[in-house]
Image (cartoon, rainbow, N blue to C red; front, side, top):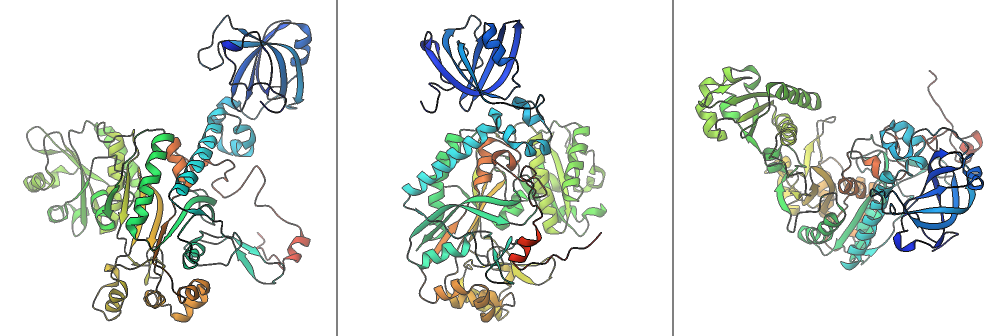
Length: 591
């Protein structure tokens, strides 16, 4: 073995009976059953082993110890009289001849019971994360993460990619989220920024002649937390390929990911190549989401023409979407609860009805649809026992609300969701531009460095007013798994002339591009290869593989929802001397 132990706490079996061994670990439990007799459990990284105190000498060592003290136990292995089939070492126990205290736990009470730490308040868990990680269930998620990262590295190497690290201290760049800024001590008034992604560096590597790049890249974004996004920092499998098309990128990930998901996932079935391709517009129309969960067999249908002509006010003049659940068994109370949940999540109401055995619509808004029953039956393919949920509003709002409704119905109605699998798809043909919610003007929809579908010609037509800029699609794509967006990627715009034209559409000229992206613009002027890439999120991948609801469960030392590390007390105040060294003077509002 190693260190002072001869075996670990998950290793001993009946074959070791009679051997003298040394184990080390944490004292998980002591159960006294007499003045000099006790059953003790020792835990290390690998498992647990019972050792039995049978004399005063050993009891005098153990009795004063608090749980979670670290000890070394030397003794003889014997077969247990009462077998514990719940643990691998349950056939044996150790009778100690020597117990050494290696690290004393000085607290009589722990903030939570180690093996039940996941039941504790999250703030408490994060404050005492080093104790939380002693819980085997929590530890196993981190082990899974390590194994997945190792497998990703091996697979990418086999695909001919080189792992190249890119700078952490770099220039601030408009990437779509807030930068974390770092003051430059030697350059008063100037700041480095932590990279939101290695986007420009990996593209520069392609212009440098490297053919296939990847790294498990740390990314830093000052954004709010949510279930599938950690605030502050996250990691992604960042990759880029020279002389590559969209299909080349797809082919690599379709070879790399399914075996890893099948091997390490909670579910052992994963999509095989090729993954399903769905255009952005089709995804919104059929699934109400650009990250659809394809394990659900329900689809969104359009009912605008029929429903908007009814006398029901919320349908009039609006886009109306419908989700049909064949043979739905949900009771009225469950339907109302589900509709209320959708409204809370989206801010939009859901309307519904059912078809009875006589082909009559009943319940919900059925009374407003009596004259439209025949048309709806034909349009939506309704049969006896079917449930119909309706959403209404402007097109995007109706679609998104229907998407949330579809997901909740898929989860609530048996037989419409195959949960025991990983279902991948590509969302393609994203719009190149959109109207900004705040500015009301044309803005980039996704990545500003993406290649427009149609190249320079389509941009020039849009400039002349021959084509609506909002109709231009780009070679941009998202990888989605089980309703979670794992990644965004794109074929890059590597032509300086085309790049300038793309930015002119959003009111940025050549000088703006040169100022904001000087290295990349200049590099492209020296002859850049066509290139494409993507960056699946490692944290989200592991979250899916572990079957966890929160991304914080698979990060060793996560921040809380307010981007605070309450274990290390970060962010924290610094002293005046440190501020002066980096030429910063605080001007905080006094409350």
